[in-house]
Picture: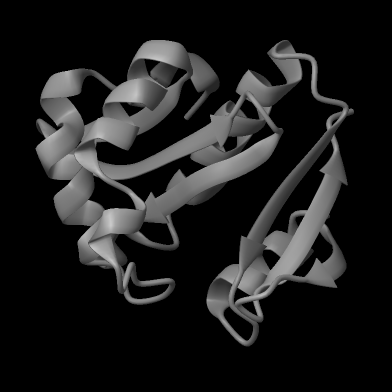
Length: 144
């Protein structure tokens, strides 16, 4: 499937309930405090940045976002039943492209150690640079 055929588009405000539902249903990196990422936060990202969604048969299977203010990957999540299909890889590329266009030369993200996400990022060329106050691994990658 080439890039033009991938079912990726920019998120719309109408997608927010499904994005919230998807985010709360993942296996790893569960959001234990829903007040940390609110529908208002998502609205701001949709208005001021780019949230990318992968949609098949009218259903969002994954989403990603880069925070153009600071160069951090804000989100990358795929429905558990849709994992292993390249959705996360394609969505991560879109989020990185958004950060690149915003002028960031280095991108960062964080994830819990010992997770499949950690392995995914390492295989994708992200390099561990630190641990944050929550014990998550902080990764970086040049924007190329």
